[in-house]
Each structure stands twice: as C-alpha cells, then as structure tokens.
Length: 585
Image 1: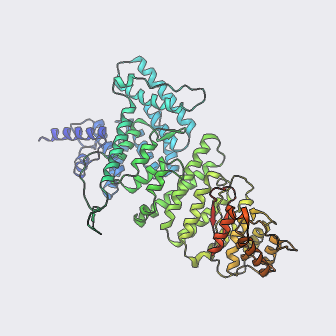
Image 2 (image 1 turned 60 degrees about the horizontal axis):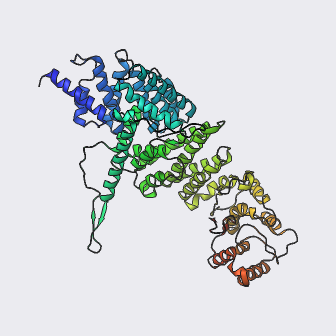
Image 3 (image 1 turned 180 degrees about the vertical axis):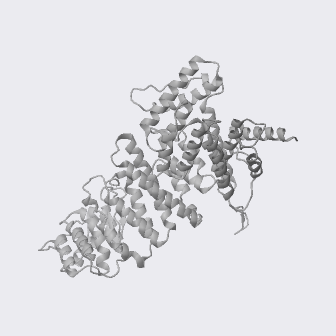
C-alpha cells in the first residue's frame, strides 16, 4: 500500500474510533503517532493530523502504564504547539485535563481548568456546565444549560433541515427539561417526538447504556470466579479465565457519551446518569482508579449501595498497597476541599458540599483499615479535628465521622491507644455541642489508656467530662462510656473517683433508689461508690426480684440479659422501644 493511502486509512480508523469510543490497540497507537504531527509533511490536512493527536490523547484516560504517559505528553505538546491550526483545540485540551482532574478527585485543579474553558459554542456551554456540576456550582451550571438550549433553539429555527443542530438541540433540551423538573411552578412536559423521528433522541443513547450495563452485570454473575461442583468439596477456579470481548466497556461508553454531550451524572437533585454509573462501577475489567472515581461521583450519600459494593471489605483487602496509599491521599485532599467550600455556603450548593463530604469521609473510613498504625493515628486525629469544627456538626455527617473514628481506631494496636487518649477525650461530647439533632453523634472510647502520666491538658479534660455528669440523667451515658474503661484500668485518681461518686449519687447517697444514668443498672457497679455491697444487693433485687408486668418490660429484660453476660458496659437509647440502639464501649 502506498504511503499516502496508508495514512488516509489510518486517519479513517482513528476517526471511526472517535465516534464509536473504542479504545486503541497498542499497535494502532504506534502507527497513529507517526501521522499526527503537523510538522511532518502529510497527505492529511493540519487539522486532520491534530484530530488524530486528540484521539490518541483521549485514549490515554483508559490506560495506566508508562507508555500511555509518554503518549499523553507527546500528543499534548503537539496540540499545544498547533492551536493556530485548530482554535477549538484549546478547549479540548482544557476539558481533557479537567476530566483527568475530576477522575482523580483533584477539585482545585478542576475548578481552575473549568474557569478557563470558553463558552463560544453551545456544546461547550453544556460541557462546562457538567464540570461545574461536579464542583457544586449548580446555579452557574443551570444558567449555562439554559443559554445553550436557547442558542441552539434559535439556530434550529433558522435551519430546520440541519440534523447536526437538531441532535445538539436534543441533548440541551433533555438537560433543560431535567433541571426544571423539580422546580415549583414548572410543568413537566413530555419530550418532543420530533427527536425520535430523526433518530436524535438522547433516550436512545441512555437506554443503550443501561442495556449494556445490565448485560455486562448478568454476564459477570453467570461467570463466578469460584464455581461449585457437584462432587463433595470440589470446585473450579475461574479467576484466571480469559474472556475475549471486542465491545466497548460500559464505563468507557458512559464517560465518552456524557463528556461529548455535556451530561452530568446528577444535577439539581435530578438523576441523569447516576444510577447507570453506579451499576457500571461494580463491573470489572477496568482500572480500579476509574471504578472508584465513578462510584464516588455516582454516590449521593454515605449509605449508597455503590459504596457498599465497590468499597466492601473484601474489595479493599484485594487492593495493592500502593493503590490504597494513592486513593487515601486523593480522598484526604478532596475532603479538605469540600470542608473549606461548605463554610459560608447556603441552599442547594451547601447540600451538595455536605453530600460530597458524606461520601468522601465514608470512603476514607473504609480505606483506613489498610493503613499503617501511624497513618491510622493521623486519620483518627483528623476525625477528632473534624468533630471540633462547625462543618461536621451536621446530622448527615454523623455516621461517616463515626466510621472514620471506629475504623481508624481498629487499625491502631491496643498497645498504642494511650498515644491517642487525649485526642479521643478531647472529642466533644454530645451534650457539649448544644444540639438536639445529634442522636448518633460519635463517642470515641479508649479501652486501653495505659499508665497515667502528668499532663495538665489531660487532667483538665477529664475534669470537664466529669463535670458533665448530673444526678439522675440519661444524658450521663456520654461521659460514663468514656470514663468506665478508665476506671476499670485504674487510670483515674482518687479525687476524680470521688467527684464521680458525688455527681452520680450526691453527697448523701440513698442506695435504695437506683439513679437513671443511661447505662444498664448492673453497670452501675463499675462506678465508684462508698457502699459497694449495698449497691450490689440493690441491683440484684432490681434484676431478679421484679414482679408482674415489670418482667415484660423491654429495658428490664435487656438489663437481665446484659447482667448474665457482662464484660463491657453498654448504653441503651431509650428513643426506640421496639428495637433499642445499643452502643458498645
């Protein structure tokens, strides 16, 4: 084949890959690199050569090897040096770099790059709006969608025979209709059938994506890694089975279509592609960084199913340590970004920031089980710092913050717990944050405090915790759960023990009436008292001499069960009578 014909054929192949979103084979990458530089004389135009370079650059998103980095650097240099041949390439470069930053959770870089993208074309308005949606700048994103829709609507009225304009209009109309769906006073109208008549409806693409994802999930389900055989104790290991499939991976197809059309996963509480993305994130055969990014972006809260499956304990246990370290670093930077963004925000923008913090802190907590003890201590102290700040005094962040403290603490050996004792004690008690909305506020407990050393900060904080105790109050549970392990380990001084005794029983205690302290009655025996034998007899009578209806009282029955198997102190939440919430020390 002649060189000119070969070059034209390679261009056609590259163009075909650009519209079908297929990834490039290694041999094809090498061939295309020989024809993409405008400095070389070619049968192709300068713009066509740059188009090939752009295809090569976009393809590197799905490759994680040294060769792809070399390709990315080379094509980026070619494109940057030849913007005068194709002015739109500046936006293409910025958008590509923004997508990379988005997938790496590098929000500061994403914010910087998105500002540089010009809006000289309706489609670039849509693409820029999709980036701003990831940053929580929903008002600006919505305005860009409206402007793009109006601009394309005007173009369509001027040229009703243009399929190119009609196709772009259909995507902008789909987004415009979506962002207005939940607004008061707006009528949710059916999508015009005109787009279907000309095969331009976005729903065709979305439905195709959903079908691809469903088939891929079903295929993986039918091919388990471990297949149980009929013979007793026999199985077949399919983990090394190689499956040849030339079709484009659903996750690649989803990102390619959403980037081209400027469609976000979710905007203004409207789900465009989030559910499809969440299901695609559970699939294998793509890099972990891509799966994790897709899972985080598609999750709307810390309880999203996609987080439970993608960041399950087994999935995290299978990750290489270097990937764990990379993901931890990215999550920490992302949490810092959204934490600073939330301060001073109001309305739906603040809700979005809280949503991102929910997801990212939960992921950070789950990844912490694979950290070193020193890193786990750092994460625990970070959680304490969050608890002391105003941002995390929000009920939506209680569970993620609790998990971060619990999981990071579990990664610290018991012999090192004394190093974070003061940090744990300094975490605000629920009754110290002056709010009635924190029924699940975390309460870190250190069971192994080590030996008492002179520390004025520790002495002061213990005194503050003891001061929170008041006679006959269930709110005492928060302080007592922290103090009882210290009492069991002989950590508290005689002066502190006496102060606890006076706070719980008063200066003239009457042991005939057991105080309400938010813990099981038999746990009162773990507290310091002047008359241990009298208190033990009174607790025994309460538990085992109850009569009539008292025997069927749910709290009484729980007291009895706990007394029969009492090794640690547990607190009961009296707000749920059908199934009380039990907190372990």
